Image 1 (cartoon, rainbow, N blue to C red):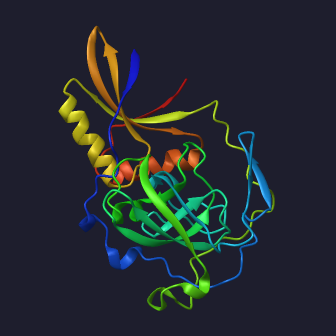
Image 2 (image 1 turned 90 degrees about the vertical axis):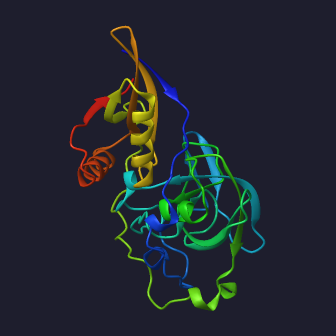
Length: 260
């Protein structure tokens, strides 16, 4: 079977799909995390320098988003990733820090908590949580034009300040093992002869936060078919998260396959 990708936009959830009363991360002015703030670090052969301060940082670029595949996993800042919180990953801002992100296409803006490193699978400037991307009206899983302006703690809006901190996890005893990207896996949600049926499934999966959903064409018995899959996934936790989301949405007929 020959498979090729079909371009589609993701994160098609309507604003009403996310309870905005639940998505605001509590903001506090705590000191830098002990995690994720090495002066420099190297990923995939590229070295990044972590900023000493957020003061004066403002940059325009593009945004990606991530969601259910990483739900409940540890961020680089040793916090628990919550796809329904207003959080984001950034390569060089201190952890944690806060930034105003503005969608350059519609003018919408929100404040997010930077508690993770990335994105490293794309050239985007920032990787938003599912809820943050949804609030900004961002549907494409990568490439949305944004402006990111860091906010010093003393300049945070009073209504966003809170006494408690986001749930943290204990620092690992040893560093996390590097991701082996030579062994990707995909969870196939289904294959259809009708493009519209597969597009409906694509929209359904991205609307529940599966950022890595993609639609591909497949040749089967000389006939063009349309396949919807989630991936690439690189560890069992990601695979299990995807399976849980599919099952909780009444989708039990899926299969996990190894990529090439």
